[in-house]
Image (cartoon, rainbow, N blue to C red; front, top):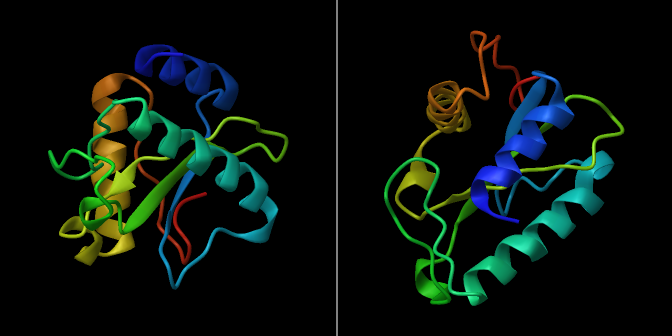
Length: 131
């Protein structure tokens, strides 16, 4: 499935309502979405080895199979519904991982608005991201 098709599927599944949060080595995925996160991360790694070059969510850094340049954190974007099966998982490079979760979520939300995925304003950010 290509990048555009993935976003179309995500948009249909989330029905306009989604949440975002950052996963870091010291800030793991919440238990209720850990299995979906692990599956999405496995798919993301397979993309790298299939010669795709995903970009950092906050800059133009291209991820490759080189462990030194791999993501230092991941942004999780998933439908707000508890029964959601889709999860989008952009990587965050070493430089951008120094930014706060709030800054990273704001950057991602701006990009989603530009793509037509988000058509509302960003709600209040609480601990752990958006809801």
